[in-house]
Image (cartoon, rainbow, N blue to C red; front, side, top):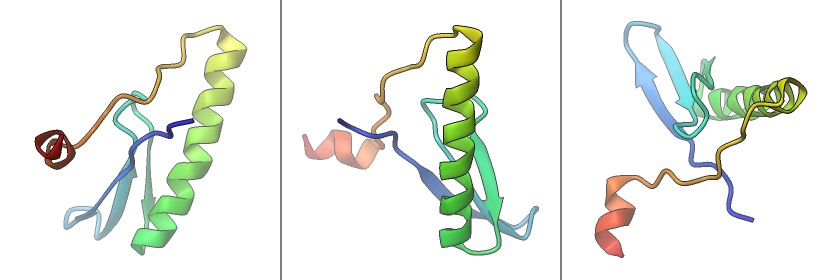
Length: 73
């Protein structure tokens, strides 16, 4: 199974790293290091998916691909 793409970037405003999953609306997390942000967004993803299942909301399939990968295809 294909998994969701995760973006990780440094935020000057937050003075730390932000990780987000574009396919899951508002699913993001903060960390002091990239690996901490990755860990936190993996936790957020599980919570997001569990909440969607409990509420009967649709769970989007992984579709997001950064432009760099689209250009290589």
